[in-house]
Image (cartoon, rainbow, N blue to C red; front, side, top):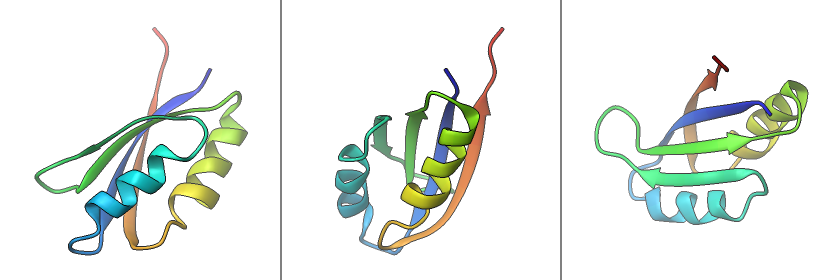
Length: 77
């Protein structure tokens, strides 16, 4: 099952709002505030790479107040 970490930057002050939105999305496993270059780190899963790509592109990146994302696909050993 494909998994990824998605690093997210949001508008200033929108961290809590976006984390709450993320937790409502199916297949979002975890979502955390972060201090540093990125504001939020989330872990997502999907049944296929295509569904993972669609979820990141059409659900996470389009959330209100999200500015940028960086997706890190996890590889199996």
